[in-house]
Length: 353
Image (cartoon, rainbow, N blue to C red; front, side, top):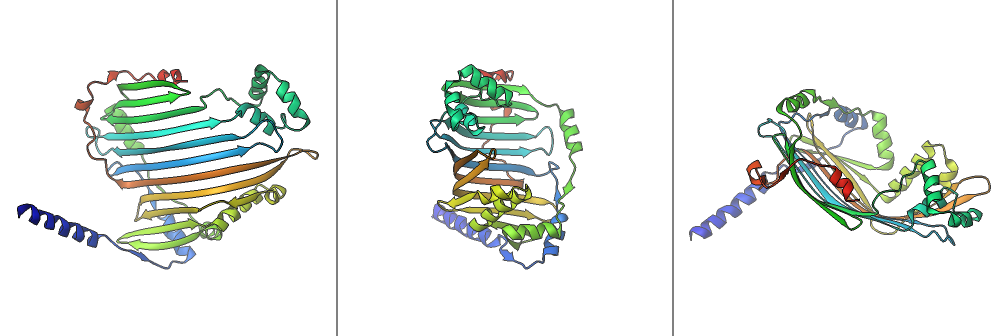
């Protein structure tokens, strides 16, 4: 009977807490009111609240080689999630926690693809590019300021704890099949440095004009709400809004011909949403987006040569920055990390290449 009563109490408390959550109520605001309210918002981090950042991404980009070219396609995939949480109220109790689990891979002949894109590997010049040695290709890329000497496949996973100025790093890094593990600690800032950092933190106000709001409304939907004492602005971008935004961006660069030569095709679901919650100060910024796009464009290299390219993008993205966040539960204390070795040697990252 005692367990049953405890269960009923838990259910009633849960219902009460949900009922007490402030409801989102839509309010009508003019463009000037939106601009005035946004411009009054302070962006500040004083350490009295926990600041948290959570984000994840799932991305696939395919750059298609020219039709008939021997260069082929380039495919980039990246997937991962990160979390960062900081309690900076007092040095003695300060705690920064970061977690990461991410990987990427580049497939295809990136070197020849870039040479082709630069006009050195297509058409009549393609035969010449194929005859170039690897050293000659590297020399051309170096002359262009392009460095491709990096791992084409890699991943990083682990945790970082910064407790009262001491960083404890537990990471596993794999690049092109080589694995490096790091489980070390070292002081990264003193109490004096911590206090100086906090003293230098200043608040800034957003600068938003009525013209900015008008330009936003041309390419996105804006809804305004009250959530308790807080204000909430929600911005959403539709498929046609994205197309128009790309056209406007190209027009701003003054490239009318390129704007005419860009074709965007939506292959699947599309969503792009952004929200900002605030009172006198910024409280939370959130964004989430997903898109499956095909972009075809023609780049005029000269009067006699145009390069046609197709880009495929399949992406999902999520972002949550909370200035009134919470530290995760169950984080270790410094005493729990005694098995870490002293000394952070960041050359280990290079050793993984």
